[in-house]
Structures are given as C-alpha cells and as structure tokens.
Length: 213
Image (cartoon, rainbow, N blue to C red; front, side, top):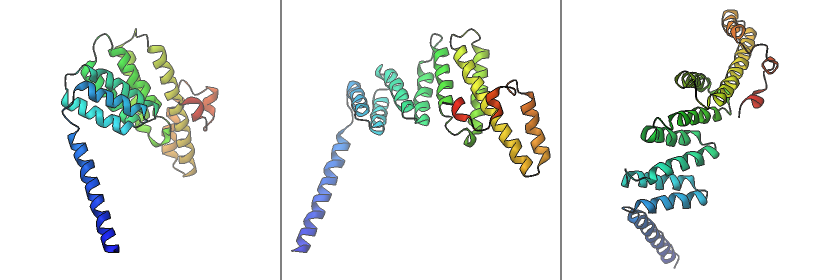
C-alpha cells in the first residue's frame, strides 16, 4: 500500500512537472502587445524577474517594436526604485544605444550619471565607481556646457568630491597608524589640493549619509 502511494505521488509530480514545462514551452511567438502586457502585469505583481523575462521575449521576437522603447524606460525606473542598479543601467544603456538622439542625449546622459550616483550606498567598497562617476560627470559638462541639467550635475560632483575627500582622510589616518608615512603623504597632498578641504562637513569622517543618496 505504501509503495502504491509513493508511486502515485511520484507520477503526479512528474505529470505536474511536464504540464508546467509544456505551459512554459507554449509561451512564445506572441504579439508584441502580449509581452508588453506581461511586463506590466508582472510589475504590478511586484515580480521584476518575470517582467525581465517578458522583456527578453519582447526584444527577441519583436526587434523593431515601438513598445520596446517604452518598456526599456519603465524597467529602468522599476529596477532603480528597488536599488537594483546593475539591471537599471542595463536597460538605460540599451535605451541610449538604440534611441539616443540630439534631442534627448543630454537628458539620457544625465540620467546615467544620476543612476551611477544612486549606487553609492557603500562608497568605501567601490572607489573605482566613485572615480568613474566623477570622470563621467566632468566629461558631461565639457560636452554639454549649456545643458539645463548642469546644476544637478554640479551638485552630484560636489557630493562626490566631498566623498573622495573624506575617504582620502580615512586613508591618511590608516597609513599613519601603520607607519607608512610615504603613502600617507601621497594622500595628504590630494587633500591639500582639494578646493573643499575647508568645508565643515569635510572635517568629519563619518558623514557619508549626509552627502550620499
């Protein structure tokens, strides 16, 4: 009897798995509007993974669909709101590659800087991102000197420079404790050259939360 029940349970499991697999296999070759609705439905249900899967199907089956443009930006914002910056930047990068033009390139490049800046929850762990974002922001202002977004970029740059200054102070303190005077002097020189060195907030080393997002 026990053997019969066990066999029956295994059979049900296998049948269920096959049914599920068949259902998944049948979901293809659908209209672009179908996949777009699936993206919206998944986002409404709070499932970003399913929304990403639906986008993959939309992008694969309908390369030239006008719905792709809107879907990319919606998914960019959805991932950004969840602090999933890698995926957010994936959608933004693809949007820029496909749809950037003279009319919107300033705004899109600004969004890229803003989303990079939003990543700084733990600046000590990603100093390369800090340097890359500073470089990207400076390049933006050089390329678009009259951009409407430059005041926002200036604010981001100031916060990044303050963060860099505070990190350099912590590095100097660490090297001094380790007796590495030459290394400490190297970073101290960077501090001395900073135009923000006299800023009150720059005199503290635990104020990242006041500077970063």
